[in-house]
Amino acid sequence: QVQLVESGGGSVQSGGSLRLSCAASKYTYSFYSMGWFRQAPGKEREGVAIARTDGSTTYADSVKGRFTISLEIAKNTLYLQMNSLKPEDTAMYYCAIGPSYYPGSRYIKTGGRDMDYWGKGTLVTISS
Image (cartoon, rainbow, N blue to C red; front, side):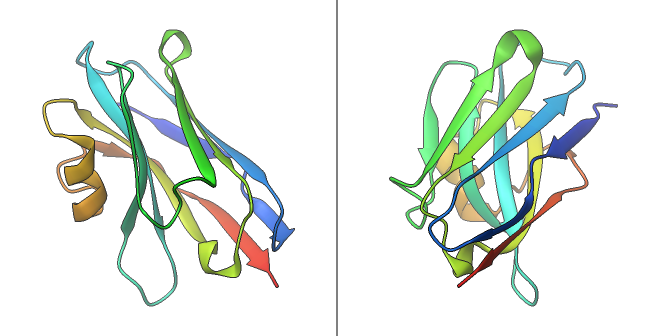
């Protein structure tokens, strides 16, 4: 069982920045994908960004140019630097880990289907 613990959420004004972190315990595979997903009230979960151990990253169109995902493999820790935040970024943000044989775009489009483990989430609230 892999445990994922997110941190860094909070409340900021529109245009502000936040940095999310996700610490993971040891995963079964040496090659994997980790990603950030979010779910706003009344909406389906959506993919935000994916990072793989091969160094590749994938972003949802809605966050390209504003968010940066990074994976520190030695520490099994995933980050999400969020800049130029907008009220529509308000959501619960979840971290997940899964196999790397699926492309990052698939995880983004499906909202994380086939990710193996999930964290409990951290709340991000952006006020206008």
